[in-house]
Length: 336
Image: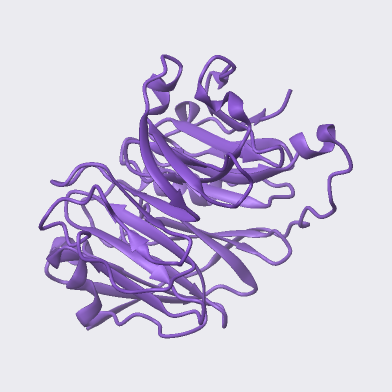
């Protein structure tokens, strides 16, 4: 088994946003969820409003289904952004998936729940867009999964969260138990990863499987574990990734880039490119051009159209990287 050692590159030491909103105006200025795909980024604020933007600015969504102000979670695939809507305040509901450029015309898909957590899986691989979610009992449901995808036979729960990945090489979902153990399932190519790189059985704090493109796990002891099918340009030669991320509380992946957010809101990014066929320019733009400020959330682009990362600070979002705004860092406000 090959092991790739990565050098952690500190970007900044930041101050975590704290405090509770005292009014509707204050609540608008706190972003609680952030996701990106393609050339777009979407957020949910503390008033449960869904807002989206591209490098031309924030969209006017008043005439779309998002006017209900009842969204509680986001997930992105390579093509879609999906939002979980909670209409009755019980922490569960239906999922709406949309290609951001089509949302303004009311083009979206509804996936009936109720789900408490969910993940979007799609759609560059052979099985198309799929939504898997946790029901009120913590069981995994993937009602749209195609036979042979590996998602049609999920493991028994209960689970407390889940993440999905699909690209041209593999399809899979990783689910977290209440005790911090990670269980992953999917097609044969996805399952093959774990023969060489076993999953952690406890202490999992966060997972991201949307970019890179491989799952990477953050454990409570500050360890980063992952695996790549791009080692030495040989899809049958998997590389296990191991590194330390001091005081990290969240992990986010982009194309061949992994960034972490630490307990003081500091952002650190590492280059996990293991293929000489992959361009290094986008990865370098993430590593070298990360913004300074006070950040609470990260979102990386899982789509291979361009490398970029976004970070939330209060009601503002900053996006940077070669795949965003022609490589120019941009900050805009998700508020009115």
